[in-house]
Length: 442
Image (cartoon, rainbow, N blue to C red; front, side, top):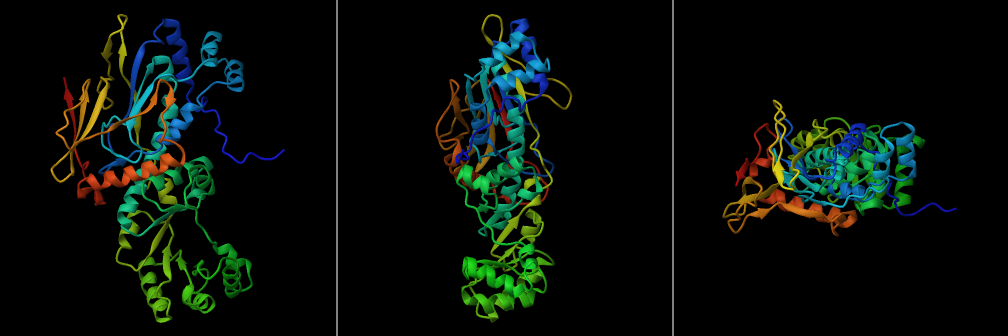
């Protein structure tokens, strides 16, 4: 039997917390489970010192919601472990989300209290999606936000995502996808390439050089296999010797040398000079070695052509979660009328009511405010941008938001969003959100 060549989406229904299903059971018992409800995902604040966040994971989330079903295996597990009663199992056996989902386009910037995702359905349908929604959005938005800061610091120099070995395997694929949405040019992760059409790159590690009796033999083998345009890792032993050997073997067609240790600024400068002296003015310099946005910014004056980023990227560069929450903000009463509801606990307040969001733009097309209308759409001055897009209608995912097409669309949205934000977003120093969020009530 041959292996499948396409990615089979796994069921996502148990990527949730136990209490989501016990809430469902209790709501079915009380009769409130089928009240029409509006849930909202948002972040009360940005990570300390950050000026903006980037929405990541929406496409993955929509793919997962389409597969959020309870099959025989899932129902058997729930029954065997007495998680819920038989009546609730009967409901879950026929579960399929049938509501509407709106939100900020993937790749867009967000700010404190931006209504990033809005889920409109029955309480029963929307409640049990909470953990899955938050796990995807919190992880991918954290990665996308970190990646955006890195690509901003890199300017026109491309960044390569290479953090797979620093995180769990599914997180690695998700991180690669989120990084590319926020401007990374490529990834080392092959599964991300397969699922989402992302460009994958890679040549050799130190072990390849150490496998051979000499560095020269290793370089000869790599050039023979991939041609002189390959990228050679030159810091296994002595960097200067390695660069000279690489140029001797590949000539002026040598594609790149990679530096992975030491003082990268000083090293890049003298390696550039050496390459130029040897006639390799077109050979690029790639730097790796635990880079983050601050290290990339420090390398701006160095003659570096691209950056390979791993650990810091896949861990959110100090902010491994976007700290988003998912709250019920409106639901129908016994008369079928929508009423606003909100949590009032100290330091964890939420604002009730269905939200509509608009980004105010000045005459130069630069963002000045995030205006959130409660129960109504804020007025557009003519050049403002409405932020909420519809992703799901009557339970069906709308085209264009998932798969490789969704990645391309999100990458374009990120570039456009960054261009409309004030220049302060490019600063790495601690500061307030780039633009304020203002609520408008009826």
